[in-house]
Image (cartoon, rainbow, N blue to C red; front, top):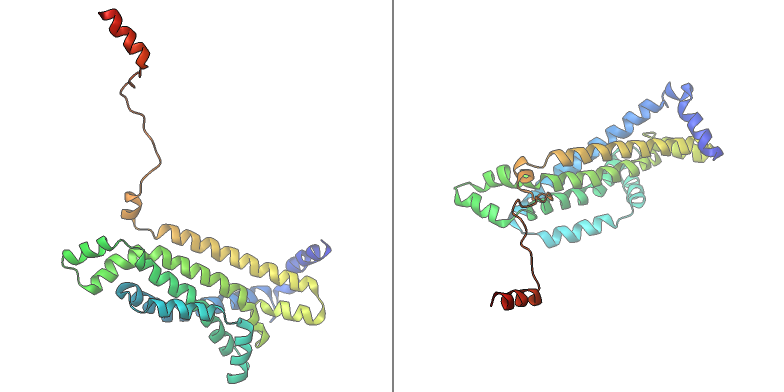
Length: 251
């Protein structure tokens, strides 16, 4: 509990908001690094995922490759790349792009696969070309799942981007490595809290985006749970004994 109170004091300390190690600067670096990584990963994964989802070819290879990339230890890959190309931001960009590609790729092709094939057949029947089907039918309908893939990738990159400070003086991870070196646990915990807050903010942003990108036609076609009662009076079911007694009396 003392560490948490000290971390809060560190977060509100005005001295941590000025200079080259200022919290706003580190936040901007971390967020910028995350955005650039997602853009690079999206440029690779989205076209490939759309191609796989539209044609249905290469899905098994994509699934196997995505699983293999996810199994790679990020810190080990980062160290290997840094030893190969040198210290700096290039190594973190490469390592975290490899981490971000699989969820975006999965969201891209599963979004297309989730579409009812009768919808695609109807689009072809009215004379749409393959490019028009992709742009006007498959992309809008598959967008929610693609946003879900971006959402998962963003959270992974935000959390793992702290490793960028392992090979470069960059981002919120600097507080973790510097605090570990000097045993300043308040700084370490404060940096961790900032990473958590950024992850929660991105989670909320992507959740709202995923909700609002659903096409109106899809929302209009969803069944509702509202049950209306019929205005007709319910028939009264009589037992067989009572019905038999009525027949006897009528005779």
